[in-house]
Structure formats: structure tokens, C-alpha cells
Amino acid sequence: MAIEQMIQEMARKVQGASQDLACLSTATKNLVLTDVARFLESDKKQIQQENLKDLASGRERGLSAAMLDRLELSDKVFESMVGGIEEVIALPDPIGRISDMSRRPNGITVGRMRIPLGVVAMIYESRPNVTIDAAVLCLKAGNGVILRGGSEAIHSNLALAAILQKALGKNKINPDGVQVVNTTDRQAIEYLLQQEESIDLIIPRGGEGLIRFVSQNSRIPVLKHYKGVCHIYVDAEADLEKATPIIMNSKTQRPGVCNALEGLLVHRSVAAEYLPLLAEEFDKAGVTMVGCAETKTICPGAEPAEDSDWGTEWLTLKLCVKVVGSVEEAKTYIATYGSKHTETIITENYTTAHEFLSSVDASAVMVNASTRFNDGGQLGLGTEIGISTTKLHSYGPMGLEELTTRKFIIYGTGQVRD
Image (cartoon, rainbow, N blue to C red; front, top):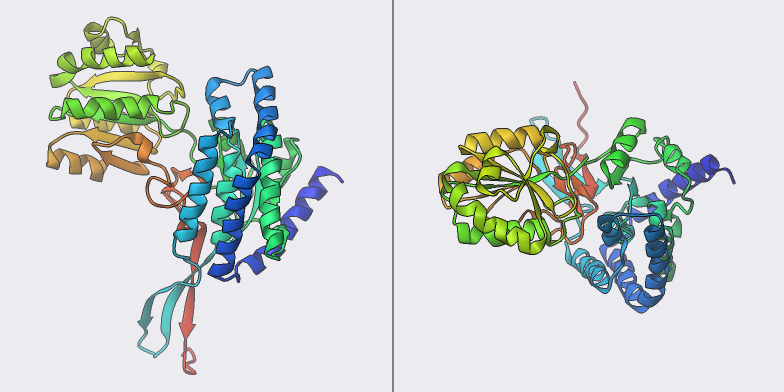
């Protein structure tokens, strides 16, 4: 079958099945998710064997360490997938929830009901766990979903897709509601982006190149973030002992992810005291500092920053360091070079902290906390389907409720419009 025809048929099938998914009871949806978690645990070794094929192929193709890290289905990743499913099961079902009821002067009662989006298409790279995370959230929210992972994870994604299909079949639910594109041909993405009559939302998740391609070629609304250029600003009134573990965790725990630290701003009044101490910790962890002229003077071992370095998403053990003279200068830098993903201030000054919270534009703004907390699981959403740095219709990690919308409902007693 030609790729275009295959994608068209897949989209039509998902759209049809999504109408059934929208009507499933909470208990039925939770039974499906429980079986997904159970099958993940029972079939883990088999899935990891398929994952090893992708890892071996990735090494042969010269994938970076960060990409290989995202690709691996380790025991820890399995624990995270299962834990995320359990959290989603425990979350209240938003579908059918009615709110904002009010009576109009003519006697009609108007309210809003929470409903599924319809059909969501996920286009993603490297991380095969997205196959499970996205499907689980979409199913609980009553949506159909089409999953198109990267060619580098094809064996892993197909193995995980089999788990989803098994759980749906066991519960006698139309398996067309969850579809995984089984071809690595890039044309499949192009045809997927043209199915505006069947698909309601596209969510790309991966590198900036993929997301820009999807945004530029889609006929369907796209929810996106291009990159994660996250900053920490160390204020003049920061607790420096508190600052170091926050900075190190933000940069070194998983440097290849979108909520890792990429730029550090340090107030001039504490820079001479603090940067040499921090440089020692960076050196122990293998982190390279790319610094401004003042940073170079204080820490001669730092590399000199080029103009093109500011705003770089390094995705490795490297970061930009700049000395600033005020919180206003820090905010101006963030507005210029940030990506609206995650921004943190370290300070003990309540007024400064809340000025930063209210005026910095990012999907998550934090005080005295690691940037790594901008994650659906960490923020109580269960798992997440991605982090949006656009504001329509969601800003930040997208969990269960972000995969729904609201429609108006009206109760009347025979009213007609004059």
C-alpha cells in the first residue's frame, strides 16, 4: 500500500475509534491502563531486547551520547513508565466535568463541559517511552492517538505498540484508537500533517529541526516548543550554599534533556566570591564554562564566549556563564536568549523573587529550585505528553487536562430567541 493511502486510512480509523473512546467510562479506561502497566512489567525483557537493536544501530550511525541516553529503555525508564501510568490512573477523569454554570436573564442555563480533543498525532524522536506516555494520557482523556516515532527507535516503538494493542484487545476496545506508524519513511510525516479532516492536534517532540519542519508544513494546529534554553539567576541576596546543589542538579543530572540548565547568570556583587567555588564543582563534574569577559577574569579556566554562544541549547556538560549587575539585567538577558521553557532565581529576598516570578515569561518560573522540576511527573500531572512553550491552548507540561477542551452546554425550558 502506498504511504499516502496508508496514512489516510490510519487517520480515518483513528477518527472513527475516537468517538468510542470518548464514551468510555473512567473504570474501563483505568482497566486498560492497568493492563498496559502489567504487560510492560511482564514483557520488559523482550522489549529491552528490541531496544538493544535500536541502541546498536544508533551507535553505528554515530548518534550523540545525549541521543543514546534518550533512546535507552533502562530498568529505570521502565519504572518511570509504570509509575507514570499508576499516577494517571489515580488522577480524576476530567471528561464530562461541568463547570461555570450560570442562568441568563431569559431563563436558559449555560455551562461548559470538559470533552476530549478528538485525535492527537504525536511526532517524536529518540525517546521510545513517549509511545507509552502519550498513548496512556490520550486514552485516559478519551482521545484517539497516532504515534510516529523516529527511525532510530523503530524496534522499540513497535514492541511498545504491541503492549498497547494487547491491553486494548483484552478489554474488547477498538484497537484502531491507538495507531503506531510502522514505516521510517519521512514521507509518512508529510502525509500525516495533511490529514486536517481527521486529526485535531499535532504535537512534535524532539529536536528544533523536527519541530520547525512540522510547524512549517502542517495544515493542522501544532503545539510545540523549539528548544529548552533554561537559565538560573543567582541574585545578590542568594544563599550560596543553597545555590550550588540547585545549579549542579540542573546541569548535570541529565544534561541532554530540555529542562537542563544551559545558562547561568550571577550578580556582580557575589560573582568574585562564588564563581571560583562553583568552578571547582563544575571541574569535578566535567562541566565546561563558556563565560563572558568578567567570568574569564574571575575563572581563567573558562572558555571565552562568542556572541553566537548566548542562547545555545548545549544538551551536554557545557553552559554559558555571564556576570550581570541587577535582576533587571538578568531579566533582559532571559527575554533575549531564553526559549520560554524554564527560568529560576536563587534569592532570599521575597520581593525580588516575586518580581522575577511575575515578570519573567516562561512556561515555568521557579524560586530556589532546580530547572529539572519542569516535568509533568514532578508537577503532579502523572506523566506528560510534552512541554509547550506556546500559549494556545497550553503553556508548560501537558498532562491529562491539557489533552481536553470545553464545549458550551445549555439547558432551556422552551426559550426561543427574540
